[in-house]
Length: 395
Image (cartoon, rainbow, N blue to C red; front, side):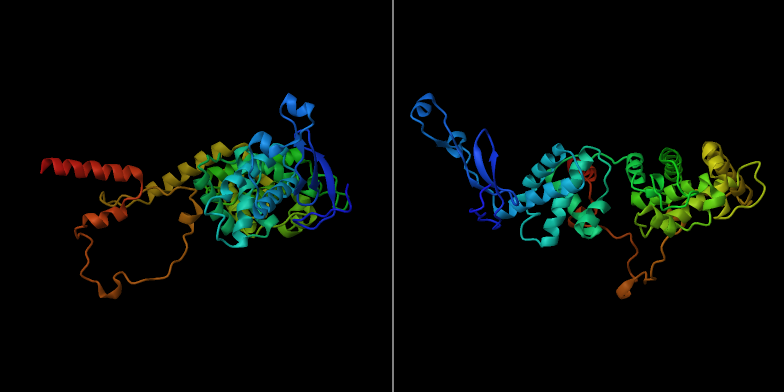
């Protein structure tokens, strides 16, 4: 180490000697700035005369890295180190950042968006290698808005033209359950609250499969649903001792954060379980949201049978309620619907014909210049061009 030298980039005095391409170089340990490049010899005559040749002359590489790009590379590697990702992941994330650095996505934008690009490069690498990581985790680490990260990630995928594989919710649940202190050696928790991790993972995966079949996962953030499923499976193993423990206290004992939509996801999970438990032939008593955890094991064991019986019960009730008129045919109501259809949002009432445009009937002709605004996909454009060519051929 050389204490007399200082880095011209960051001003640090932590200068170390590092062997790069079999050359001794002076490198700043804080920012990675190379103070001296080092030298090598390329031919036998140069070696005999002890002529030192710089690396840029021997390899032909004379590209310099800007300070902003270097800071971004160091930031990406620090983020991968905090997440404890393998070194191959860090190299791939850096390559994604170097490709995105020259795109308009990183130029003339705010500092917050540049920081979001760094996080999206790391998240893209994890998705490429099927590493269980969510965008919400990156958002909490960077103190950035989730909506901004989502938009930047979509723009980054389209700009780099890469394929992003689907994320397995089972692998994500496994990694998320390992962070709960109640499923590990937690001495401060009550004795009845500690639980085996394998048992929780088994029942949580079954609950997530049930939630997927009842339209509770599609289009939702996975972490709130996983947290609700973990809490419900934890309660079902010892319901007599744990049903009085609220959701917030469970998260505090587990030293995990309670996501804001997790309470709604827990309510929806319990409502689905109550619908299925009503089809159990040996269960005569009515259930509520607190007593349904006592029968969660039977519900998950006979899940396929209960789903089929619930569908048959809805079809039978809809057929009995049909009117005698043959013209009035009612379609059967599904027992489980997506939340956007089961509980649609209330929208503000608006006038059907604003600005007193009562003469519009909807049957007016659409000009060729306006019809292109209604065609969005390439398949629709191809169909329109084919139909237009046929019309021109007949004329």
